[in-house]
Length: 357
Picture 1 (cartoon, rainbow, N blue to C red):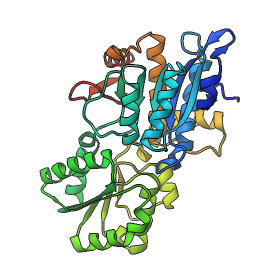
Picture 2: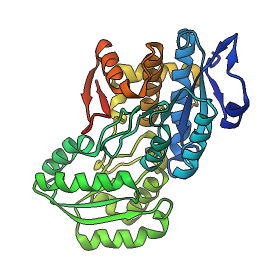
Picture 3: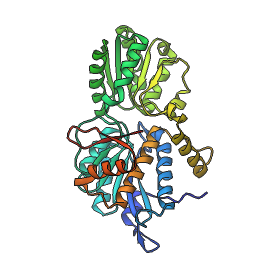
Picture 4: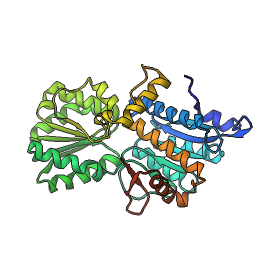
């Protein structure tokens, strides 16, 4: 089966004419990490996007227009990613944006995209308000961690949480929410550390010593990508993986594969991963992915599935001519209600939602 999805690089998008069969293509800037801390999730996310593009195009496109995906490396610095997106928007090379990347990149892209093009950001996010035309389809920290922390605290009789994450906007918000959630469950935070991207390997021993000294019995990890993998490997080497209940808001299938699996029984993920493989929808999605990309394609992880859904949402909104930034949230809510989904408005100021099963 051939892939009926067109993927082009930003330079080509800047200088090519958007015509195919006499029709102007509908172009979405696809901001996906191909490098950097989340680079290991890039191939999976790209496959999810290509599957969505294939399904849109074989279904007639967007009002008869072929969907094209302009790949922007979301693993670069926030300034560089935002600069590339700005150049594409200035040139009129994009009709919309979809992203699966870190929240610091998200905030930088939001600043240049708001009011100019619809922008759907699909991973778990830090919460708070959004600028016009920006939709967050993931969950905020309290929604993501609330049930998990409460249930783990009761199940394992936890009293002393440690918080270790990368040093950027999402982990900061996660740690703030986690402290409140721990207190609500009768536990407390005894250690908090945030580490710059790529610096975890050099900080491993001090972090392990700090965990021992703090006598933590639970560890919330808001490290991402390769940093999460490196630290979980270090915990295994030290034996602390068998003494600590671990909960991660960013662990997905590719990260677990890179870790080499886990046999402790006390590593938990607060992402829609792993258990959802038993769901009929995920099984069907995996089958369509294998048919399109072959048996050796990367597993579609939670990031990839979120991006797949986000692109279908964008295409459906565009088909209804409902991409105006000022009315994007309301249009998305009406569309999802019409299709039988329950929609939870997760915004304080009204600019984000979560699609629930």
